[in-house]
Length: 314
Image (cartoon, rainbow, N blue to C red; front, side, top):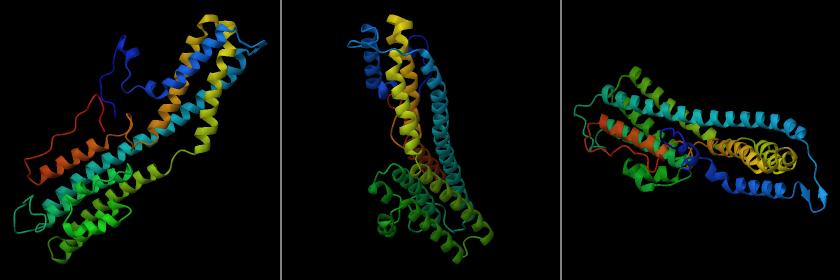
């Protein structure tokens, strides 16, 4: 995610970091060079004059703009839903920590280093492992050392063999809650509240998987939008050269930047859990959750929040 103040004046046109221009620059350059060649040739292809009026481009441009707007709205809905789901995880993990520390009764005070002997600490650490595992799962990454640092030793073989590690970690949280019920450390009515929190965390994770595993239909993006946008922009110089003259490359560049940019932006944000510039900062969100939960245990030696590097949060 790009985090920076909105530029003003000339910087608005010169800014590249976070701009979609980097993604479409070669296509845009080719289209502009094509428009320049068409302008220099006055719309002639060898000895044959290609005559196109602006009317077909008007008829094509309106529905193309509508479809691009609809597609980008769909892509942004996926992006915003992903952000709301991770906001829900922030809320639920904080609730889980509060519930574990205030509702589970133990004779000893909370010791953040006593994971093996204190079920409250163990459950909070499992919650930290859960969000990290979900982040890694959504990005198809692996960091075994990180997950092992937050899980009991006996849990790791089961988690490592699981194809969905967040779910395996959630099962461990459920077993901890069952242990507390059996030992009488929590009232069954209060345990139901913790179970509701665990279910909500599972639902958020499953919804994130749904977004990740269900892309926008390929035929819609490729056939209807990509190809139509490219054909429109590549043919546009032939329809404008007789009316705009030497300004044709500039007009074509502006139109192509708009259409190619909208198309590329939709491609980028429709998969919100990736590592591109405009994707969600899952590393930052996980670090924030980790800090919150460790602080609730009474830890003081906390890692710093992640800050943008060259305006980029990952």
